[in-house]
Length: 516
Ligand code: FAD
Image (cartoon, rainbow, N blue to C red; front, top):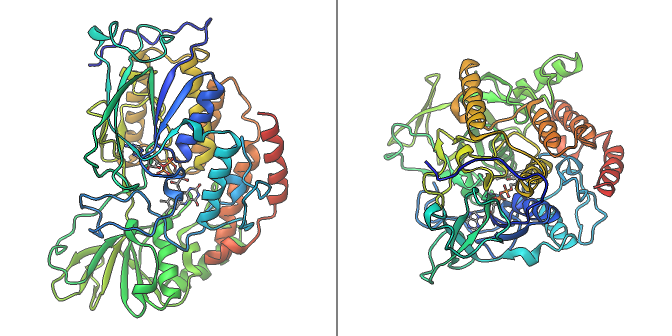
């Protein structure tokens, strides 16, 4: 149990705290800006030599293609990746993701990954955020300052309420600009009033355990270590998992001349999570079904709805299949529906990622991808308000949600917004977990916000910051839904089909930013 007396805050006197932010990706940058706007002093620790996190593309891959080795590479982007959301929807509220900023080079609505990196760099420049970033510095350990020794210890701003936990942050220069590996250099340790964790969760591969994995003679890898289709030409590649990355990579490989089998336990809608049975239809026939359903106004229909058949209009040569069940020493595999397929050259697991906080010793637990306990996905009740997390929810539009979570944290730390008591937050969190269980939602979906959930959550966050109406989010939701419909109609070509409401959305985004 952490030594913390109460969450009660003095709302009369805004506090100005020293805050360590772990990670300089989109979430860490948003946190730095919102913390500074609320009067705090952020220090962003970034293990890489640049900001941007996963958008800072690297050709480097790990020694172990399954991602189980010692040496870790943070990046998971592949060379040809284009965004799967329209740029207007993706952008921060404070800085529209149009093309008006200096350095923009790709004006497409679904742009290349390098354009997102340029945008994040322009955002950091616009708000002079780089001055807060300590590059090539890995946070190794975050621990509460011992309450008994707290009075005598130096560090922190001295402006936080005495009953709030303070934190000792131990960091070390990163080895070579890449993640995690120790350089052997000496570590240093500082005390901060608060810590905001923004370390991302698309970096540590999640792998299924299947019989025969240790005897299969072909290549096995995770999509985390995929960069380009070049080495796969003429090969038979079986991809496991048909969410965004699985579908994208299947398209790339097939277009480059690989024979592709795309396996999934259920066929999942990349935006809403809608599922249909795997079956053994080919993608082409599923495509026709989806297009016909869309034309009749059937099929999907929920926010951003893309029924699984909408991934159908993919290049010929991709076979849609049931999930992988077993691998064999002769290079064949068995699928869950009993089908046996011979001569597989490569199995690529597009099975997602783990949450991982190696620098937090037991302050939160990660069980089946539930980070908990966390009040509203942000505050661990026993360590609130001075420890918080930005960016855990998935199936969301991340950047504007990062801003809202960060604004809430910054306001709470300033004493301008109040949290419930520790007991109330614990009770609320327990109730939330019980409601998921009652609804049959697997633990690993605790932070998943498909459909309308994310917009409800965003509105709730805005209310905590005194912004009841959440100005400007209606157009985001509308454009997000239009994107879902477009995917339904255009299949793989959806990225090149201009969405009708885009011009209005851009204008609204600029107006919104001007009023912040
Ligand atoms: P990250 O970008 O991962 O940043 C975390 C940062 O923390 C990194 O820079 C890392 O080096 C640093 N860090 C981690 N641990 C430490 C430590 N101990 N010490 C110091 N620094 C540390 N989102 C969209 O909106 N649109 C898309 O089209 C889209 N496509 C995607 C495609 C792929 C393949 C992937 C993987 C993700 C995609 N995303 C997309 C989601 C993307 O992850 C988010 O947009 C967002 O960039 C996540 O930001 P983040 O700051 O939370 O995490």
